[in-house]
Amino acid sequence: MKIAFIGLGNMGGGMAANLVKAGHEVHAFDLAEDALARAAENGCATFSAVGEAVDGVDVVVSMLPNGAIVKNVYTADVIGKAPTSALLIDCSTIDVADAREVAGLAGESGYAMVDAPVSGGIAAANGGTLTFMVGGSEEAFSRANEALEPMAKAVIHAGAIGAGQVAKMCNNMLLAIHMIGTCEALKLADKNGLDMEKFYEISSKATGYNWSLNDYTPAPGIGATSPADNDYQGGFAAALMVKDLGIAMAAADQSGANVPLGAHAAELYRAFNEAGNGGKDFGAIFTTL
Image (tube, rainbow, N blue to C red):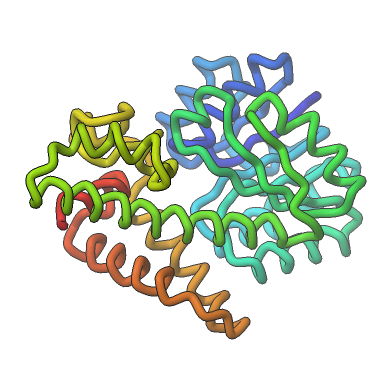
């Protein structure tokens, strides 16, 4: 297939490279010249404008920072410039309402579109082992599978348009909660005379098992290798966690959902970000406890 890939940052760059490895012709665009240079090294054809990148393609994939940018890119540069036969796949993490609005505008112009946010982080983006949560019709989901599979360990149809974003915000709220809980437990063990490595050995095989502990251990030199072993560089930036928690809190307010632990996690990560730690991996909140 001929696939346009819009947004070649920490996540998008690796995702586009995996599409090339799968034999697809990838037309890449990003505002950053260094990102375009890396894409070219990975076998992508690079373009200086979105409209040029989407010309004549079968699929458009985007991985962008926020809903405002997604809306602008699709309304100004994709809709009306990509063929109406092209499937539009937005992998950004944005507000549910924004996702539905963009898909609605695309549908009015004759395009099929899905929202397909991801879980897994930079390592999974580079390794082709992301989990995609897809919102859209059954037909659009079936078409999206072929484009998403080279980048994925799992591609799951969450439901109608916007359902992928609902799944993502709930997943990341849960991730924030169990990361903070994992950090607290490790620190509590340490302050009460139990070696953290020994606590990891026990809890990772007991009912305290969770992804933050077992697969992304936030304490340096303990358990799984993670950004904690690299001074919390790389991984999933705390600033992005703040953004995702903001989306979840807004949705909770709008729907009347009661999320006290999610709200407290949002408060803690917001303070962590405001203290100048937004560029660090979200597991670095361990250092504040």
